[in-house]
Image 1 (cartoon, rainbow, N blue to C red):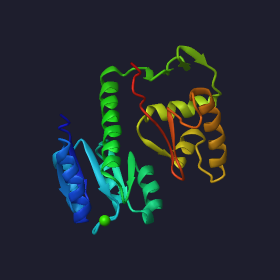
Image 2: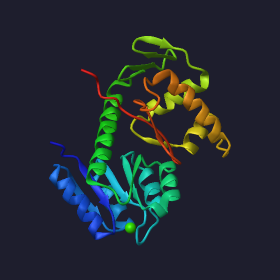
Image 3: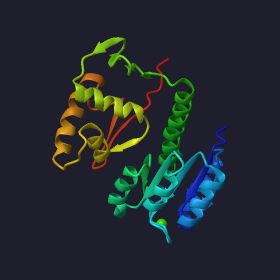
Image 4: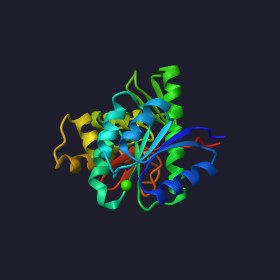
Length: 236
Ligand code: CA
């Protein structure tokens, strides 16, 4: 019972067929576009719930397509890129894409990304309704108004940078944030050597919130790309 509409932007017929067959089998509705121009048109006229897009398109640069769509829409965008387009993938995330899949990908990977994005959509809708100042994710609670963080109802003592990092990740839960994006938001700059300090702060933050440092529950590392806060399923 998904019934979300996905816009699939992909010029490669076999990849497009793999995606649409998967979507159909899992009860998603979809639209397709073979190039950037059509993609922009479809996105503006049909208002899809999620966009899955290849970066290497025959007419326009995928990044340009993202920039255009971002001028009027917050629709979640999952980028599909070949390994050779790794730098483009990071640019795409910086321009507002939410997540990525690297070719070749499995059907399971595709479905997992869609589920993450769907959860993110749901949270975005809830936030719109409640404008809540308290963020809850598993055992983690952030009271933005009070500037307090709780884990299992116990207050955590975070440094100002750790707190800023955690807020940034939580406000973008489900979304991959690039190193550049995080550094610009935390320090207002993004020098290459800041990545090292970002890693240090992330490590100390994780020590405080993660039960097991080798299998983090909240903050996922994307090697060479950045970090993402995962939505933790409620433990029953
Ligand atoms: Ca392509």
